Length: 51
Figure 1: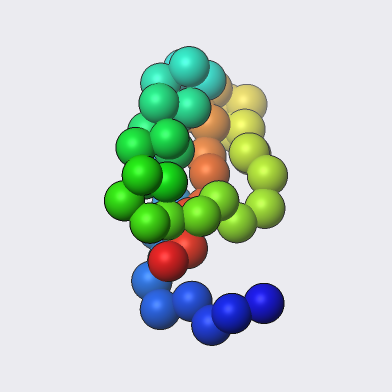
Figure 2: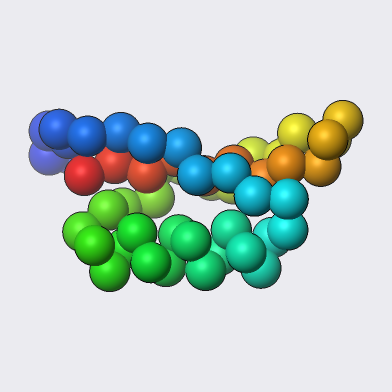
């Protein structure tokens, strides 16, 4: 694995919105790190991204 220099976490209330945000970040050179996580209390979806 290459060394990453940046890390961020994207969050969204709706899975389709998260997918759109992740795709936008991929176009900007980011890569998903691991899988999607869901927080059940508030219904948030999360995706870690690295660059």
